[in-house]
Image (cartoon, rainbow, N blue to C red; front, top):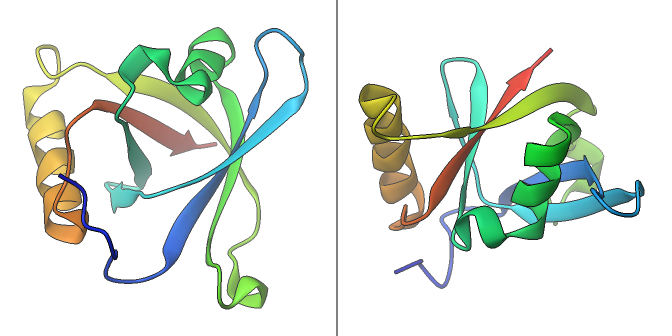
Length: 117
């Protein structure tokens, strides 16, 4: 179960391209960093619209920042998104799950990786 209050107010601001509309779609989401990549967990798995958008077009942009201090937001970065399958990448899935659990007390869902380009 997710913590009601995360330990800080740092979020990843993700922009995908709508798979039907072709328009930019923005979300704010919890994340962890690991090995130079950024990871989020989709509770709705492949049913989450942002995941569907990434599966359709893995080219995304993102930034990391705090709601309370938007002036400190990191510059927009380009990345490629992909889903992580625990059966295919058990060590990576375990590491990301452990980081999410430590940061938010929650990691149940589909892991999505953003690899900056």
